[in-house]
Each structure stands twice: as structure tokens, then as C-alpha cells.
Amino acid sequence: MLIKEDEMKNLNSLIFLLLIFLLTIPLAGQTKHIVEVSDFVFTPSDINITVGDTILWQWIEGMHTTTSDVVSGPDTWDTIIDQFNPTFSIVITTPGLHRYYCIPHGGPNGVGMAGTINASNIASATEDNATIPASFSLFQNYPNPFNPETNIKFNISFRELVSLKVYNILGNEVAVLLNEVKPAGSHIIKFNGENFSSGVYFYTLTAGNLKETRKMILAK
Image (cartoon, rainbow, N blue to C red; front, side, top):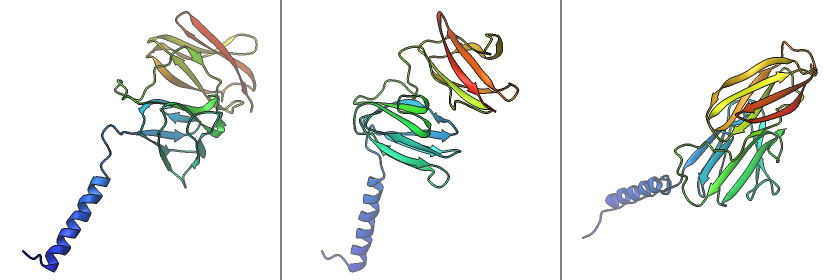
């Protein structure tokens, strides 16, 4: 049976459309994780993924980078995220902990605007992207020095009552930023020093029997 020329063209077009459709379907188990990039913070900052998943950084505001170098992780990338380059994506192919950061506002050691990607060969049993930290930790505020607003990031490994207080150089309490029960995970609290004078301040995080204090500088 001979196929007419018009029928052959229609068949070729159908095959082409089918191939395009199949190429756009992600392979089983692959997931796209979106990280929002705004002023001084990646959201979420710490995520669990499976090797082969895609990370997509989505610009919200400001001018930033997403950078992972040979010191901070097994894979490397470095790209600008701003209004002219609003997205960047990469497929993570290597298992392990991938640390990344924003060059103007963070550092490879996790200080400031930074995040982690924990890639495993087995799909995570959790239903969301939140990483449960292994221990209690309070990070250096960023930016620092600041005027008038800064971000304070901390990790807790259990759901518990958390307080975050600010003290002046004399040790007097000047602000209570947080005093409530928080779930396990990473949290970021903003501090606005608009009504405070320039100088050195201390912020103290208390969770259960654990306590940690760090210094920050308000420079107007």
C-alpha cells in the first residue's frame, strides 16, 4: 500500500510533535526546586534534593550572584541574578553538600547571604524542601555593618520556645525580636535599627537550655 505525499507529510509532522512532547516530560524522580533571590536572602536557603534534580534561582529584587566554587562544594557555578538576568538553573549531578553564596552579600563559609543544597542518590522522605539542622546555631547578621536593617539567621533542631533579644554596649536590653515557639529548621529575623543610635549591639538567641550571642554594628 502506497502512502500519499500529503499523508507522509502529516505523519512526519505528527512524529515531530510527539518527539517534542516526550522531550519536555521530566524523567521519573526529577524535580525542579525554586529558590527566590531577594535582598540579602535566598528562600529557602537550605534544601534537600535528589541527584538529577534541577535548582532554579528566581530573581525577586536587588543585584546578587549565586556562586559555588571549589572550596564550597563539589559542583561549581557562578552567575549574576538581577533584573536583566532573572533566572538561572542547574542540574545537580554530584551527591553531597553543595554550599553556595552571593559574592556581594555572603561568603563560602555560610556567613551572610548563603545557602546549601544537600543532594542524595535516594529521594528524600520529607514532603518539603526544608532541611532539619543537626544542631543549634546562630549566624552572623548580614549585612554587617548595617543601616538601618539587617537579617539574623539561626537554626534549631527541635520545635521549642525561642527568644531573640538585642542588647546595647552596656548590656541593657533594647529590643525583643522574637519570643515564641518555632518549628525545627532555619529561620531569619529582620532587625530594623532606624530608631537606634550608631554603635555596637549584641543579639542573643535562647532556645531551651542553649544560648548564643553575637556582635553587630549599626553604622548610620
